[in-house]
Image (cartoon, rainbow, N blue to C red; front, side):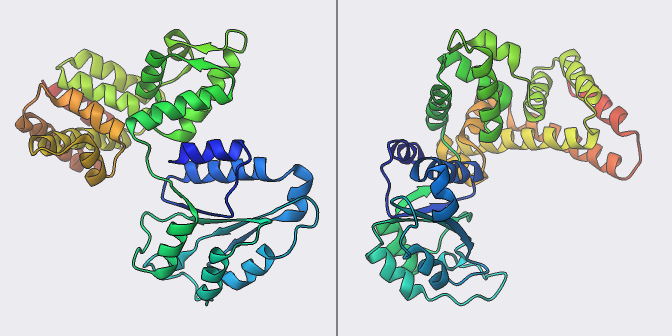
Length: 337
């Protein structure tokens, strides 16, 4: 688990080879930053840190650097990005790699170097020998969306890194308001940590005071008001979004996406799928699935399908210029009762 690897890095417990792969860029970048922060001093970074793009540079060239003794200090740190040879994808540019050299290196790595391969791909080709060897011998971090519990642990630890404590109900409200984007959550936690510098504790009141709702969360609340037949509440949120200069077509798209997600979650849950399996199949964060399940329990699939059809019709009218965009969406919200 990525959080365990981060703990080791902060304790200066390093492995000779790391493989970071997945599409959650924040987790990959955070891991790299921790390595830079804890493996080398600022002075050592100038001499003993380097990075290579393997879509442009052969692996054997990068390994020559890895096997060079550090100039000062006790270790070298080398980042190797875009190792496309670990996937079934075709490279953008034709670069020949001597993968035998890499196999030999990971079998007997230099004791004074840390190699970090960062693969921003959803999947690796598990059939390839080099992929198997790396996953067997390197410390592997899969940068995927954190599950509900992992996300809460991450928030607690992120707050602790800023020397503050965050209450459990404050964590729940933070997720409800800001969503699950790790970069956005980091900014919000850091902001609140500065605000509570003396008290060292973030509670619900602080979250309510300082955390602004994301556009997606505002739309989620708007959809919730629609489903509860609270037209006045839905219109109020819609007008606020317009005041923030949000495009009606963008708002409509997010509403449609949210209602569609609710319908899919409801149907898959009816078929016996777990939250985790639904999240994997729909490629959304498990926390979004959890919230969708909580909201759709009172509604029949036919109600959600009817709203989806109404949204599709409004989308067509807006994109073909048949009606004013803001007025079309407002009339739709008034119509859904």
